[in-house]
Length: 266
Image (cartoon, rainbow, N blue to C red; front, side, top):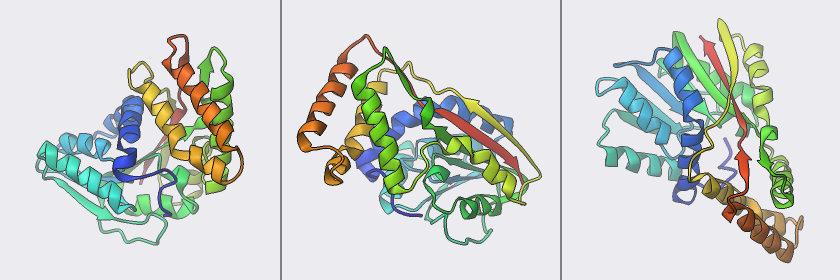
């Protein structure tokens, strides 16, 4: 897999930790449907900052095991530091590229993957690897967003403009910002699964750090739109100021992307 489309490691830890909170309810619900429990082996494919890795480690307990995978050493360093601080010793961290043809050494009870397939160029290989990691009758749980479902109320010019710029940035980086609309079909094309369900989950948005999440997202790609001459420096600064004014106002309500979660049985 290519390097992250956003800054990684400590530079993106805050945004990823907030994202974990926003989307945790749906992820937890589906993983509990898969009967995640003590003493299991679980793969976290694309562990990012390690927030979900930590939750998984508590679910499987000290005699279970979490195998946390990421293609970016900086992310693995952040996630490993988090686990060490929490006193968790049941996590193995590995630098793995999901777009390579990998072996089936893990044989996990559950393989979890959140906001990762959306970034892969070769999604079929990624899904094939998720199945390889998982033992017979185990589950693959893959969560991906539908960014088209974002909204702000009342309507706001700066927010809408930044959303359009984000979609343009996604196309420039060759990732599908609305992959959640198609994730089920990629799994259906695979012959690795015996059963599958697809459900959409609304994110949690009534958290005080949501405004910081929106601001951080813009900060991560705003310089790129100037570098590519999509905006001038002055236009970017003006848009940033308008966004700050909106975020600092109590009059606005935000809606984040719906999360589409595939639960597929191997």
